Image 1 (cartoon, rainbow, N blue to C red):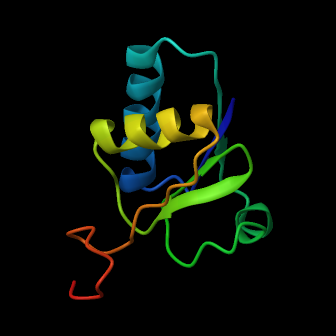
Image 2: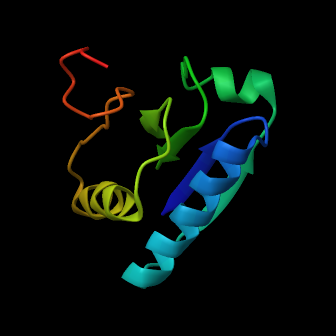
Length: 98
């Protein structure tokens, strides 16, 4: 599995990278985590707000730092071939209230 953490290296980007590493370790999966800081490379994923998380070349989250549990769910879904994305909203409800 290939995982990319997209962002310029800000504190939120570093937190996302750390939480992603923790989720991968907790799951015991074979994954390569790549930190992408190059702006043109980040734009290939249509990310509107950093940080972003890409799993197997699909942007699954951007604009906030998910919890380790949320990242674990995204990784598990990717392993199963399921499609799941997290909203950029603070509460995650996808209703646009935040």
